[in-house]
Amino acid sequence: MNAPVATHNLIKGATGDWEIVIGMEIHAQVSSQSKLFSGASTEFGGAPNDHVSLVDAAMPGMLPVINAECVAQAVRTGLGLKAQINLRSVFDRKNYFYPDLPQGYQISQFKDPIVGEGEVIVDLADGRQIVVGIERLHLEQDAGKSIHDLSPGASLVDLNRSGVALMEIVSRPDIRSADEAKAYVTKLRTILRYLGTCDGDMEKGSLRADVNVSVRRPGAPLGTRCEIKNVNSIRFIGQAIEYEARRQIGILEDGGRIDQETRLFDSARGETRSMRSKEEAHDYRYFPDPDLLPLTFDQAYVDALGAALPELPDAKKARFIADYGLSAYDAGVLVAERDTADFFEDVAKGRDGQNPRDGKATANWVINELFGRLNKEGHTIATSPVSAAQLGAIVDLIGEKVISGKIAKDLFEIVWTEGGDPRAIVEERGLRQVTDTGAIEAAVDAIIAGNPDKVEQVKLKPTLLGWFVGQVMKTTGGKANPQAVNEVLKAKLGIE
Image 1 (tube, rainbow, N blue to C red):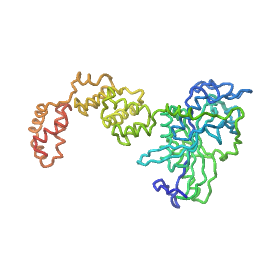
Image 2 (image 1 turned 45 degrees about the vertical axis):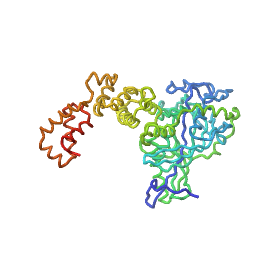
Image 3 (image 1 turned 90 degrees about the vertical axis):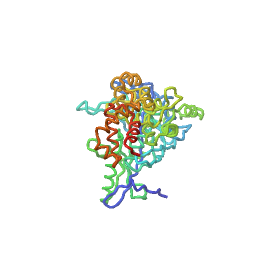
């Protein structure tokens, strides 16, 4: 039985509506000190062929030895994806010509992967939530890198990446638009970063996506898919899907048929182009690697890894909503990266951890003021000139009515550029807001006396009260308590 079609994701073609069907294979580089089957370093940026062992170079007689930490990282990831952990898995040889993998085959997993079915819950910008099924996660070794532009007559090979551990995370074809695909990769990357199993750095190639795209009439059987290989940015994933879907729709509407093939995305042109016809599993001639025994472990091993997992984004988001009264949107923004969530909580829990600050006010300052300034000036939370303690002090000063919201922004600017203790700065520079009713009344009286025409107007149109508030704030250098100013003005002008 076909699932119901979400009409908001349909693409209008010349002959009617079409639906995109997307499945993804994410290649996530495992965070580990050494490679999957050798002791060579995984450090990024070394000189060409600087991190290559005899195993990586496939020298005669060299045998692979499984890296236990890579296995643990795969299990942690599976647990983070709410997936089935297989206590027995098998490494296979996947055969086809790799110019940058000296052994001539890749050690991967085929029928018996380390992780089975799971799911990722994805929040979308329009408020919807989708569940993307995970079909499997398997471990495999990465290939090296062919370099074609350093010599006019030869291709060079850098084997530093050869043998680095990858987790291939295969989704079900549950994604129905470019926006859903981008949100899925973003959420998956967030989970991996929380777990510490992959740094998710797409610029360095730590996370790459193979995107399978097909189109069909709403409710029709699945169409022929094309795979777009090695897309290395979330923005490019969206562009590649949009282009490829339109390309396929154009062919089908002209009476043609889609050939199953592997394509590449040309980011400069914003288009996909054919690379090769798509192989099937039997083309790779998989067979169990004779040099590696089946990988087996017990449930106690899995349980121990599970017990040590950090709080993951979905659980943290739910807790932020429950404990701090945040909106789902604000909580989602804060938990998108583990370090931003930790920063927010460092501010929100208060100085002693026993008296939490106002969650909504804290979130507003972290998201709007701090994040906005960090983005503008190219900083990260790790390099923020304003610490959690300093921002917390500013929130406290507002809550205690020592300073107004306007003064708080001026104070934030001072702390950002000069540093220092916000409380000491307020005292040293005379930034306390004026709460003395007598002083506020004197300022109000002066404004009323000097503007009789405005006084008559505000009695007929009370919305003009804001003008008087602005004038009082101006004469007090922005230090008057706005609430007190409003109350005094209403009393003096006889406005309810």
